Amino acid sequence: MKTKLKVFLSGGFKSNWQTTIIDECKDDFIFFNPKEHNIKNSRLYTTWDVHFVKECDILFAYMEKTNPSGFGLTFEVGVAYALNKTIILIDDKSENDDAFDRYFQMIKNSANVVFTNLDDGIEYLKHFTIQ
Image (cartoon, rainbow, N blue to C red):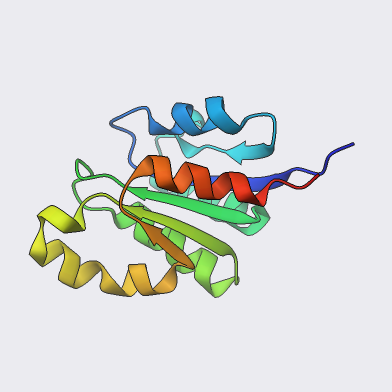
């Protein structure tokens, strides 16, 4: 039986990027997807998020250019960093927004690896498959 690493999907909910990753990698990983919990109360969904960041092996964080603030993502990256989790960050926003890039450097420096597009991040994630 193949061991599956657990991946927390951190990022915005406007697009359907989480489904893209899950569809491509569902046989190799267990995913924690906050987009699916449907919890509306901020105290409750923050507890859910922190619980599953603690449980994951890898935090996959996607900062889309359409994400208005990235506050949730930055919080989750900070928790994962404090817990010494592997952090894969895709920063799709900084290359077109110099002010955002300047303030996002701390988050980029907290990640183990940073990519500028989702496809590269997914391909890298696939290298963590355990046989």
